[in-house]
Length: 346
Image (tube, rainbow, N blue to C red):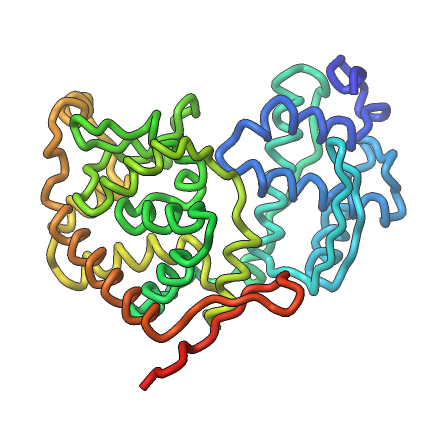
């Protein structure tokens, strides 16, 4: 990849080395690295099957190429790509326009990175997916029975990664991509009870991640998390999909659904002031004065704690009810988790 770091003419600059170089320099350090790597692999896999081939240059990537990529992604497709020392095989029934737009955003960021570094004078202009092909905003809301089933399921897993991820989101309304990177040893202060949801060392963006108070039932979870010295996991897609299938949840139940559910319950129950909810979710910018206050006062956003504690308790009650009637088991080969009803259920 040495040549990908030098100044290049668009007619000679190879796309694949540029994408891999971007991953190493920038993509792997962003908040959603698994998604970015997937986008890069998908475009490489497409090029391997397209008429351009994997040796395509920047000058050859025209709007028509992106239209072919979009059509390819939205239909059933399969590819196998070697990426950073591993071989990735992917089979898809086709994705929606929203997924293609995420791919386009990641590809655009890669080409803009090399423009800023002076390696290529101008990268391809990446289009946007037509609005009528984009999915409507999700309005999925979990019931307490569903949320309890998810918690009960995760509590029976030997690995507590998924459980801690969900509990953190439920107690803080964190965005899923930052919850996946959460390190309690660095982001939680037991003395003040304040959680800084922004991953340590990450650049601040317009999507502000709030400083929030830890509710009381979350504190022992954080303490054990620190004691276990558990490292953040950047991707838990497989565990999430397995849980969703085992519990029979809708296909569009995503980690962000927890954030949406908590916010909806806070608003509907009218427990917390609307302005406090917006601040808590990172929707309102902090003034310099508020930043100083937030860092010093353990009771910052204290008005949000009763509502969150109520949601937590109702979810835990639902989890206990689910666990009384259900258990996890594995198949004969021990390779697939399934939910079964406990004997003696009334």
